[in-house]
Length: 254
Image (cartoon, rainbow, N blue to C red; front, side, top):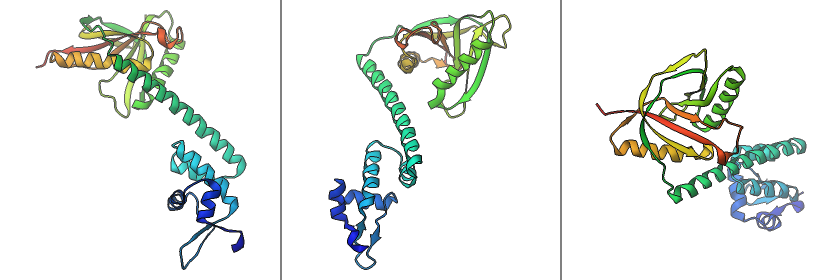
């Protein structure tokens, strides 16, 4: 059996990997040598391990988490295919998020100005639904709330209103509502600062940046809840055609 084993150097050449990589995979517990000489410590590998070595290298290059790589390598063939497809879907979602971040940076680099103005936000009598979410899930949570709201509301008038805390944190409470004949939430008239955002919801942080900078420059104190008024109902237009008014209540410092 010893004759069927390859030295770490020969195995590295077979897999087109470096000896350093193979030693690192061993240290991480991802690819254990088929045999380790108890006296010299030399590692030896079987040819059958080449597929696992190449799989690990590809997954590491794709930034797949180490626990997921370990699960994939140790799984049976049928289960491995399902796990790889699941990682592919997660990678596709991450790529889309990175594309959104890239568009955000490109728009930020353009330094396109927002028209910020002081206003009096009117009192609102809303039929609303609410939920708790984490920062990464705020968009998904708001979208689900809109679906729940519009399927239950009758005789409502646009716009749809999103209500958010000032502090984005774990376990934050968000709500959406519409003006209706039977409100369950009333917001008072308030002094506020507002701007209009044209484009995808993923780029709303640019508008918030403009608003909060404007507020800070004038020594005002922002207050919750922040109001987002969706002037184009979700699903009625493409991302570039969306229009959102952002309204942040403010008060003079005490």
